[in-house]
Structures are given as C-alpha cells and as structure tokens.
Length: 212
Image (tube, rainbow, N blue to C red):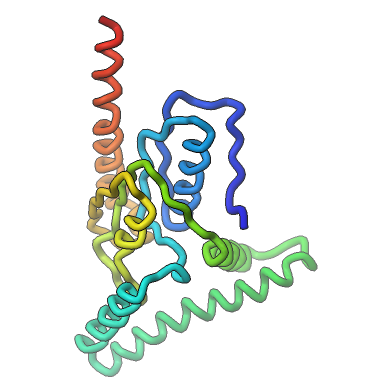
C-alpha cells in the first residue's frame, strides 16, 4: 500500500528530511524514493518514530512484556488499575476510529474529536500495511527519554535492521508528545540543529576544496 507519493519535478541539490511518530515512517519512505530517483539525502531524522508492530521481532515482544511487568510490579493495586485503564483508552480510541474510517464515506462533516480518531486510525492502518525496504543511507533517531504509561519498546533495534548505513541515537528528556512542546522542543531543536551542522560540515569542506 502506498503511504506517500513524491514528485521530483523540482528536485533540490540536497535533502534534509525529518518526521515525528508516523511522520518518521513517511520520511523514511520519502528518503527511499529520493535516493531511487538519483537525489541526495544528507539527513534523515526520525523523531521518536516506530516501525509497524507487525514487523516486531520476538526479542522486542519479550522486551515489551518485561517492560509492562516491571511497571506493574512497582505499582499498588490502585495504580495498576490506572495503568490498565490507560491502555484500554488507547485501544478503545483505535477501535472507534477504525469503525469511523469505514463509515467516513457516508458523511461530509465531523467534529474535531472524530477527525482526530479518523486520522489516528488511518495512520495505524497505513502502518500495518507498510512493508519497509532496506535503506543504504544513514539516519539519526531522536528518542523520547520519558516513556510514561503504556506500551514502550525501544524502536532503534528494528530501525537498524533496515537502515544499513548506520543509525545514531540521541535522547530528548521528554515524553513522546511533549517532545514537540515547550520547553522540550527547544532541546529537540538544538539537537536537530547540531545534527544538520554535522552533516553539512563535510559538504562545506568539499565545496571549499572544489573552489580552490
């Protein structure tokens, strides 16, 4: 299933591409298509992005089970109930969104909450159908350091199966969504700026040599 269609009519000399969450998978596919079209991707940045769970290895499944078991052991009975409720709300929203995706063609208007559920469900559907290919370039992951409640498995291991040029990881001290909010977005912007400068330095040196 296609998740993005990219036009190369107005190609740039060098591309720096970043995507947050589901957008990281879109950025990964964009980089694939740019390289296949003969373009140069200098930086592919994945902002706390995850590949589809259907591609998870058994090691990641075990890691997820250990993570949840550890969280539950550290909580009292009341906190355990809150933990389960957080997961239940997540899956309830997902199922409701899936049902509304199927009904969307019948309606022309939705309220904001319904649109949010539709967007979430459509993104998860696209992720389940997406089959990543090996990428020969490099990438950088900006990973949230605060995992909060609910499901968490370190995504870097699975990304490394497909990013053959090497994946470097930087940690932002925030939760997943809070990464794009103050004050954490300033930290992310600083790290991203440093990453861009890092990949631009070799290009600047090469330009200087050619100008001599």
